[in-house]
Amino acid sequence: MEQITVYAFPVFLLLMLVELGYGLAIGRNTYRLSDALASLSQGLLSQLVASVSALFQIGLYALTWRHLALFPRAALWNSVWGWLLAIVMFDFCDYWLHRVGHESAVFWAAHAVHHQSQDFNLSTALRQESTVAFLGWPFYLPMALAGVAPAQFALAGLIVLLYQFWIHTEHIGKLGWFDRVFSSPSNHRVHHAVNDQYLDKNYGGMLIIWDRLFGTFAVEEEAPIYGTRTPLNSWNPLWAVVSGYVPLWQLACQAPRWQDKFKVWFKPPGWLPAGVVDNSPAFDLQRARQRFDLPLTRSSMALALLQFVLLTAAGAAYLWQADGLDTLHLWAFALLLVAGLMGLGSLLQRRLAVAGLLLLDALLLLAAWLL
Image 1 (cartoon, rainbow, N blue to C red):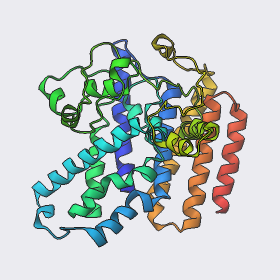
Image 2: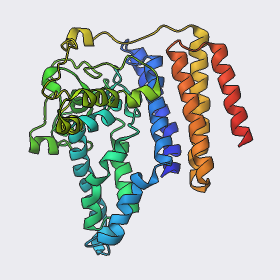
Image 3: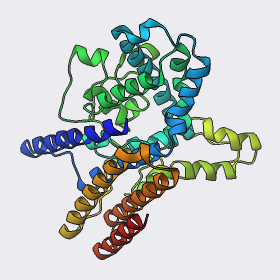
């Protein structure tokens, strides 16, 4: 599956360039360099995490299928209808994981990464979560019990994931009957919005009928405002991943009762235990319109682009060979790439000068050569 990701990225990049060019041509550009690079960095980071966490990505599913599957040899799974059923089953399971990702605090902490961008474009689609697999694998076990083989499960999931790429755009309007059956750009803009009437709506990845069936559907009406209600305000890729867990840990420490220290992780986001007061300011939609941005010099922008291109090339080479690497080299090369992403984030954050990033890159190249 890593090889498929490597093949897909040039297509993603081409489509992002088309979207960028179209936006510039009509005077409605939806891209900002720092935000797009931060989103793409999360996409690369999620692939690095997946490469060293095969047990959670597919291993536990495979174990369940091998020992507990009810119909593993059913002829259905080798037919066209079986493949279509596997895709629909994956989309259904994904709906519930996605919904819990908004309705349970610890799941939201993992999923919020995908929502942190205050822009909505095709680069946002690649802003994937790194820790959801550690929590979400049980949601797909019904497929294993039904007999969907691990390879078929993985391919069905890839199809559902790839489908969702094109729906992250502001340049495609409403699509009539299509919006009533499938997840579409209009439906998904609602999902990414922080407007009151759009919160926790339109979870469907490929089919929007799940939302219609289970009461979580909303039509796009007023203009969506994107991001999270507690803005990230950072280009640091690791902080983006852990920022949701830190306040939960702090809240658990403050809770006076032991049962509440446990509950804070699984109650809805924003839930407070007895005896704990939230002094943070109330959400303000007008304030949410203000986008986090830090102006960069032209040299910093050029280096940031070059840094990401080189990291993407190195990441592609790593993913292509990941299956043949031993554990030591798998982790070592992944950590070096993460360090490169941290350097990129620090440059975008203006905490690292051009010379500092070049020095970091030289040290990372030396370390990779010594390995």
